[in-house]
Image 1: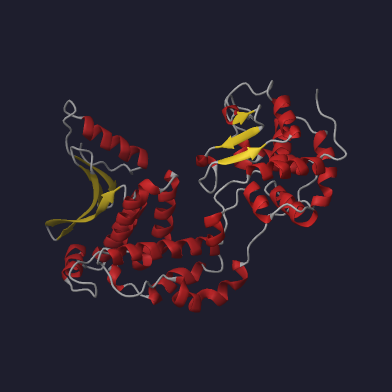
Image 2 (image 1 turned 180 degrees about the vertical axis):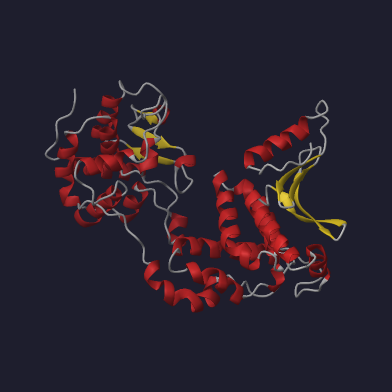
Length: 415
């Protein structure tokens, strides 16, 4: 397989790797594909791939490695190649400069790795731990966008607090959530580098004792927890009566969400196999829960009646199907219903706050029971160590009281 002047894409890369692995009757063969501007992906007969940047010094062809794919993504490889092209434009030799960097003695010892190399290896080491494949992509995207241009080619041993500040300061107030996650990711990578003997001393991306003294003032107002606009619990009965006059699957899904105090995604993706009508129980698997832990939801009589009403309309696996065959209801469906009803100042997620406020202000149900009903993790680790059960029986009584409050006076149901 020869190089091509066509631009690469992730789909083309995967196709090229597959072709190399299956060539020659399954024995495989080596190949190389080009992205232009001196950037190439070389593929071994076994399907392993790595990036190289090719250039010439006079008439002498030279190349420099950019890292293994997919640890080094197409986007990162392009950025590295662009940096090397800039060096060539200045008359510099990237290969010679990199060799000088590697040969140099760092504060951590004789072995030197750049931040980008450490990042790629860290992501490869942890990829299997992340539940969602997009998690690795999010790491790669934020690091390549914000960190790599500043410290990508810098030895991990030489990265300082000043470097981290240069990365975070431009986005600390304008993109605070992104900046916070980025800081944590850089801290993890530099921690990995320390464990592997690539650097010594304090972690410059650490918050406590380091960055809190440099960035806290500029972000103080942004670190206030944001709450989802919610309906006051005193208006829930009026809302339930208004909801009863609506039509369609979304109307039932929203009522079920309110009665169970669950999240939008949990309700939209609810499946009939998870429902036990006799035990009045809905078991949400851990894969769909934010905390990664199975959640048992006690179903009140009203919630069971909602299920009875939608069952003739739901032909597939999902309790609340969308417009497409055997697809769940869209996460935006209930939000759009609120707008049509004139409740455009509140959010669907806010009904969980409505439920929580009602519990705290009008009932004697325990704090831990309410938190368990919302599937909240306990921040106090000492308390969490002793709260090992899910308080199901107490939650059953709580959800029965919540149903009685929401539906009094009770709106009529379909027969």
